[in-house]
Length: 459
Image 1 (cartoon, one colour):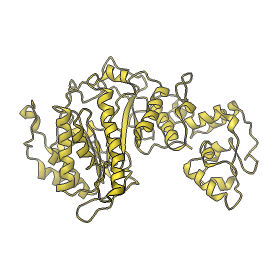
Image 2 (cartoon, rainbow, N blue to C red; image 1 turned 135 degrees about the horizontal axis):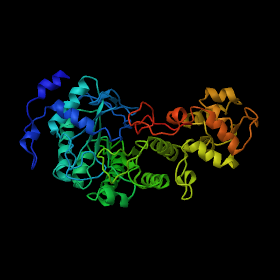
Image 3 (cartoon, rainbow, N blue to C red; image 1 turned 60 degrees about the horizontal axis):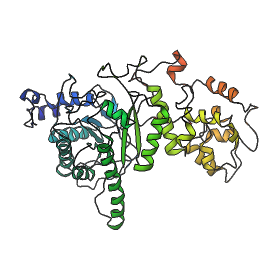
């Protein structure tokens, strides 16, 4: 760490229009403190989703299984060097801590400083890659060009071959986004809010058109590049790990049905890898925005992530989980258990005859355990101890399955009876509910209710 400080404490010569000279004085480590803290509300930080070995001519590689060993300014371990290029911004989004009217310390890196930090942290084995977002400085084009310069220097001058996730700036020249896409592994464009009306209300400087435009460009570029890769195997890869997005929930009155319908549409129309849900935090203390008495809606965020997992990997649709008459998720039960209780006509499921997709819908059976069941039953008859060895959570599944026509215990296939028993399972209810009744968690409670990639659906 000291090597970084001593090597780069000279004032930067970088300037931008209208910036007073006093704004250029912080050292690179002071900037790092400000800009990693400013990035903590951006939750789109996940495993890389791409394998790439070093070619021997540079440093670093990328593993699809995930990235680790990075530290933010407040000491939390995160998967990447997650930082903003700048927290300066010309926009006045009401929900954003970095909006132009906020009275906060400001800092801006130069492209060379981004490279120095990434390489020096990598050499110390603190990180395996970079997550780079930014406020809007001067203009979207100006900001996107600075980001591109940083990526270009990392890839060509420093020969860095590790993982890079970069935010595409809405409103920037499509050519700049394309050039950045050939240098990044993953790109994302923040949807910000679930509906166009919410965006108009809280961020009138942004529009659905400027957000969905680059999202569509990235999608088309990925498809076109795949065809090029088939024809020319050494063609440069464009955003090989795909794209993601993020939306804030709780700042505007959309219900869960509306939010999940938007997410489902994005998956279908833009082939996104991931939609992230960020519980609204009134960091600006704006009186026009909700002041939620229990704090950020993290339990709601948790349920949205669980439902999102069902959409992506368990073959559910939004209409199966929610409806206009029932627009919000059950506080006390995860979406999969809640669906099963409302559709007892599909149960019990016979383990030896049910197909893979049917097994996925059984509470307590996840994707891996369903695969193991399908494989194991080809050679032998399974019993409940075998299911437990395969990873099935029997304390939830036992109400919904039979083995050779027999249930594990004599149970009633009645909604109230099963619900009471499921709720008696202390692990079914999030810790904040089972210990103190319903309250919202602190934003940084050490429990998997947040938006990071370790959120998994209870099976």
